[in-house]
Length: 249
Image (cartoon, rainbow, N blue to C red):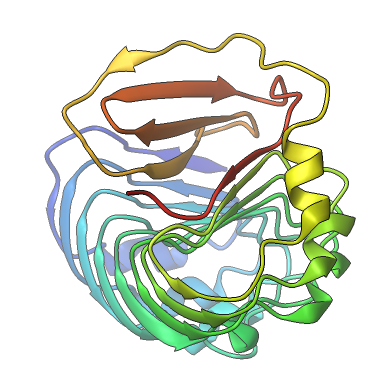
């Protein structure tokens, strides 16, 4: 069973009556006006694979009970008012997409990124994460999108990023990174290949930003990258060249 209620005008808290849906596999509540804390009882719905609730007014921490969701594939809580730290035990074996951008989540980056072999998208942008990019980032062998912009990340860019063979977009802009950009990344970014199906649109934004949107009831994604006054969209796996974004001026 999957419950899709996106794009409405629902208000109030997520109803506790949903806790009785023991066989629920997908909960899609994006683009509403829901408020209150993320219910702890969601962690008891052991069949949950997709939790997609961006663009609401949810607040409070991510419940530690989410560590019980062993089948979770997509977690999208972006553009809410979530604060606190991501539970250190949160590392679902099948997780593919983690979207937590535009919240107030904090903590050391090394404690947040886990050895998740199926992880394709990690978007932690516009939060309060600090620390450094871990040297073992290359263990995320399926990673396509690494978006860490607008945080407080320090240190050097680890050369292990060069080992991510599936990566399509790296956005490290607006942090406190230092040292040298690994030559292998620059070489990869400037090498042969081309972007396909790029659709630029006008935008009033002057700063660079990137976001990855999940598609409810499916796995295909759309990546929007905005730099200066142009927006570019990439859908699914059509992006064939590496894009790197470290800073803007």
